[in-house]
Image (cartoon, rainbow over all chains, first blue to last red):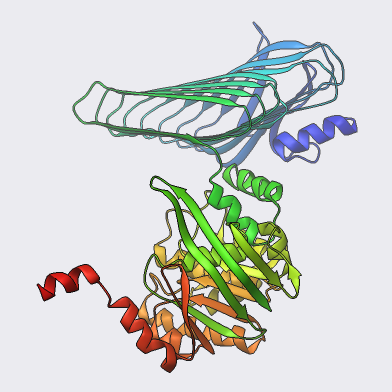
Length: 305
Length: 244
């Protein structure tokens, strides 16, 4: 790995080299390193590009890292990664994609991650997207996440895209069985002429299933964002979606929450708020000696923390 | 030393120009503890905002340590040593109590125990608060105390301006609050507090009575209080009705 690749890896996965435990590092559309453990098996797919990650039932306190880094311009890839999380397992999965684009040809990483979360299993899934480089080439990422959670299963998804991705279309679809829980925490910042679209579709099929989709977004310069959240309550369930966005400069943001109750005992709430940074927040920090610009940075960083 | 020379402030309202403050002459000497009091709507908060630079006067001059700061922005005044505690503290999503105290202290690496020192001065058990966000999850009284802690944390303060610091604070904490002001006073800082509380009036060096946008009286508590009763109790409409 060279310095650029190491930097990308550190940014998207907090890794300072090859991690411990199970991992699969993909670099410029090729596997760079891979390791399985006694409980977590990673195998390449034979019919298409991608890997299968099988986590044995009852696996506890283990982590899987599957970062993707691209530093060659002009690459375009489509990857299928399937995760099978066994009954009662409790694991952390860290994914993420970093693109360094030094040339004028664009780079595109599209991925479909499918999660099969077994009975009473618990998964924390962390995903970071990041782009850098002086080239004119567009850095594009289109991640799709498909989630199926069995009875009593729990999945928390933390997704972050803070910098450098020119265009993204993110789709997340989840189906929940009885007593299953799906939590999403999304952080998104767009700048320049970037475009980001993020869509959630959650089917609350099981009794006492619940979901909470929380998005915090900042759009600056002339960037555009579209947030869509659809929650369907098909049983006795709880659903909540919240989009909280700060708009700056000449950016545009749309938030379209949709909730559908198909059951008398479905309890669904949506919240969406878009606004510029409150003047009084800037004033307070300026009375502490910060300049207006410094105050703005603190407010945005805190909001996306 | 802070000096206001013929300071006026007006706004353009639906019914034309409205004068909020008129020809205010006021001097706050170094190390002085001044309380500004008077009826609601008299222009007290506006005066505090003019000093902090949040509003710009429509007439007159403001001098601080001999320099004309009338055209200085908020940041420059803060850096020169003017601190301002909001009447209604601002909430921030994502910014923690510790973040805010660190920003106030101008020290991003302030230790948790350093932050705790400031919080305990305002009667907050620091362990419960340092990592909480300064957002809607805090009560009005908690926010108010954190606001005051940000002023204590500012090392550069020469003049601290508090806009109704006692509002929303419970009786027990009120004792602590009085101690905070006394301690700042002992540290040779000038203090200006907008307040209606007799216990705050009691510890002031000087009381300034403002009503109808003008300074009505400057003096000790005994000198100003009778006049305050007179101003605050005057409701011509009610009197006329009563006389009729």
